[in-house]
Length: 456
Image 1 (cartoon, rainbow, N blue to C red):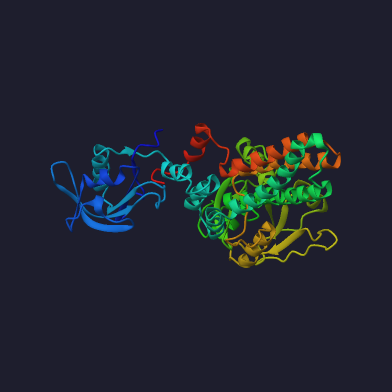
Image 2: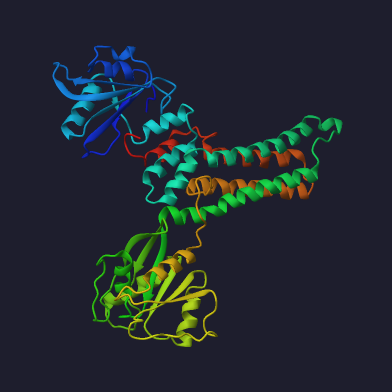
């Protein structure tokens, strides 16, 4: 990749009424000027920065391709930090492709996925965690994921890391200052103060790393497995929650033989509901494969909806508790229009929620949804909250935590300053990897930006 090239790409999805083509690079304005004629007659090179100009895009023969609006941004005051031009034209596929071909003939190159954002990072307009937030913002599907991505894009996560870095630098500076004067037996760092400061850093890193579990749940959706015996109404419940006929409903036992998944939003959080094959003893090979998948999905899910239409035996209840010991179990008593199930209080503790519904008549479904949301235990998300959603960030935080814990152990064991200094530097390096402070490998950068869409 040559970062000195002038690049161009369609920045909007095809099929809309309006399309936007983005051009960035040192020659962006000059290249567009070769094919653009302003209605005012003024040359594009003479247009002031942050201005929008109306005119025509013409081909090499002087034929008008489209009437357009051209936005001019001059370096460094642009998204990429380079000279940038955006052409707003009609959304015809022919028009968009023709303009792109004209721009390439004028000296531009087709941009690679994420290349505009990569240039923004390389030109210091944003750090690496903010650049990754751009992709998360584009991919956000609900209010919670949008707020997390927007907060990271605005630098909230970067600010937390900068604060940690400053504290680490304070410890490192004092330790290394001692090393410079080691022959004079001078002490600059109070070990108790250093230990307290290291504990503060460790606590903050732990908090950030722990938030990854919540971040992944919000970003990828919280998995909810619907399990139970055959014909208790699992598929009817799934259809009811999704508000569409997603699963086949039948009185015949064993109708659902495979896993059916779909998502809904409850209080701006995405939940992935999984309807599974009914659990029973059967000689049907295909149905048994479905039951095997049921147990697999049960182990993967965070929340279990155990649908019943009669009181389970003590043995069944004990086995289900054993199967869901590290999960949130909700017993869904279905067919409340036909019967009311009452569980003995001594058999069900406070860790298990019980909700009575009628999936057939859609009764008490709102109460079930609220119970599911409460079981997810998702904190209220605000724009300024810092919650880690990126696996790369999480891995760096875990390594930074291991390094700072070695520092704490070293201080407690009165290790020499040179050993402490090495672990402190490692902690700084791992935190810097998140924002891109020590990233130089094109392979690493390419792996991050290749998942972006072209034009961003």
